[in-house]
Image (cartoon, rainbow, N blue to C red; front, side, top):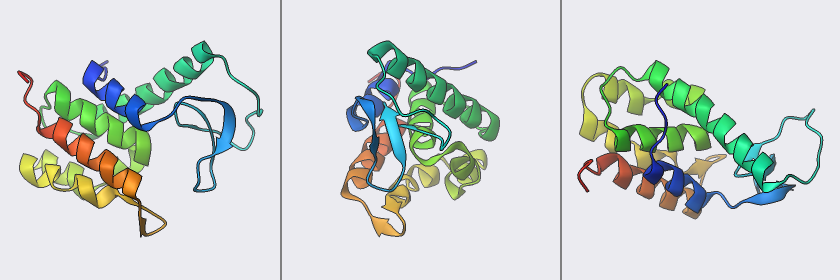
Length: 147
């Protein structure tokens, strides 16, 4: 299975703050570790750094598998990493069914790249943090492998 590259992992870690105790993410979701959304049945407890990292890699695997399953276009490693970051943050189902993926699968790479900024809202309200994150993901998506 294809894995996110180091640039993509560092991008995610730059936007997700490690929190070892559960917290409200500001949008009504209980979250812990590196942005892991807790389920209602999850026990609320303090994690170790190793446990937080394990949750991150579990969540990344879901995003990686989702992108691999929904994108037919041959992605370079930076494009794959940017899409994994997007799916990690927004959800595999949402990204898999998106105009961005439809454009990419049709071969319209630049059209797909232009879709990243559209994913900057929570509850219909634009988020400055998501605007910055989408810009970073878009830049990674456009970054050639030789850079």
